[in-house]
Image (cartoon, rainbow, N blue to C red; front, side, top):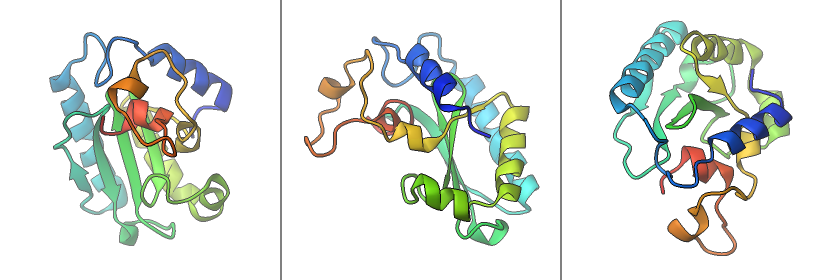
Length: 166
């Protein structure tokens, strides 16, 4: 299960490096890729399917995404696992990230699916964080707003900071 709000906010602020937007100082792409590939393989086995995996991510604060097809879940839709380049963070979303609000996810995202995903994340040392926290307007220490200009009606969010293209 994702961390509670207070520890999550503390972790996000701790990982918010003012000098590094795409990945933290000391980031090891090879090790991150190997662990990400393990996660994809383990989710394939756990859900008895072939997940869609996006490994071709560039100019982003996330490493990649894994989509578990709806036919393999007991929930109402596919499930997206997005892995950040920062702090072993992972965000798990019903459908596409941002397509369900928190209440809808509680209703439609079945605990059996959550359990299977959380078990694999934990086994590999990932930290699940609620995607709903991440849609909050970014107010951290980096120069994200000036480095990644967006229209005023769509300011950067914490999702942008750790799970999006920059």
